[in-house]
Image (cartoon, rainbow, N blue to C red; front, side):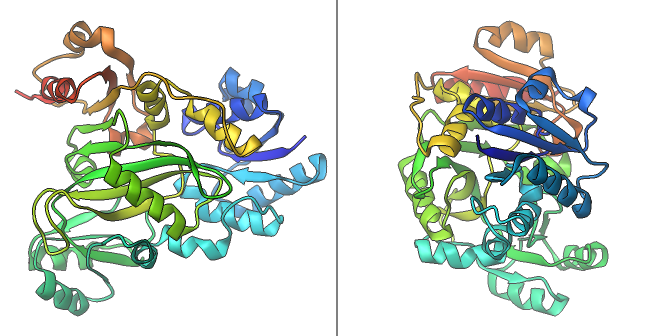
Length: 395
């Protein structure tokens, strides 16, 4: 029996489904987390062969000892994974320490975590990227802005999601940024007027996708995080051909194997120096599933089970799980205290027959996803757009 260590199996909450499917495929599933065992959901408890509670997942020594304990107790560890962007570098370090060869290693981290280093892989794949500089000094940034003009976007070179991402529109913004920025490396990029499209896939050990889908984000995730806008995105009923082509080329260029991935691309809203309206250019790669409730939405949109497909990839390097009837699966995350025209009861009354889920968003995810979410399936894009108009209209 093979041994799979799952880091933080309780968060995000839906990751318990990955553990359940691994168990059903015959793995010893060994969990390491900072949640008390008695607080784990019953389904997760029943999926874990054993659980090791640490006081703080940030403490590498504690997690190292947990992996060492499992190695002593169960023998060689075949897989170690968190499926979480935040822990990618630590996962890689643990694989190296314990000779677990089934995932990324520390030497892989630069190209898959640092936005500036991703540029070379995109170039190898023949995919355009935004012009950039590392924001090392005010003068360096001023020279860059003289070339590309305002606005520009600054964000951590090694960051997670849209946190600490800022649009600078004038020299006063630039001065304020340097006065308040954290002591880390930032990347500055030209502003791109575009809509974010994703390529999501489960990839086998040969780097070939065995499942593909994607999403479209309405508005700017940066504005959602920074200004508290409503969050809106939908899973497409089938991947766009140009996004799928770019995603597959990026898989090869980044050397992705045996992973669930979420690659983000810009679709240009107008002609710009980097390309023509409608063209697909690179944003960033994420070597983990799309965040929050997105894997469940992929299931709703494709009438399938991505947790099962992923666990089959781990166990068999392929899957017999098929995709069924397809839908657009729309997400809206509404903000507490916003004066929406239509209340929750009206949403239920109008869209109850299409509703797949409705619940509060975990505080750790609410910055990017809103405070209360509604997830609804539709057959047409026109219905999706009407749903967004109805649920986000404010007084």
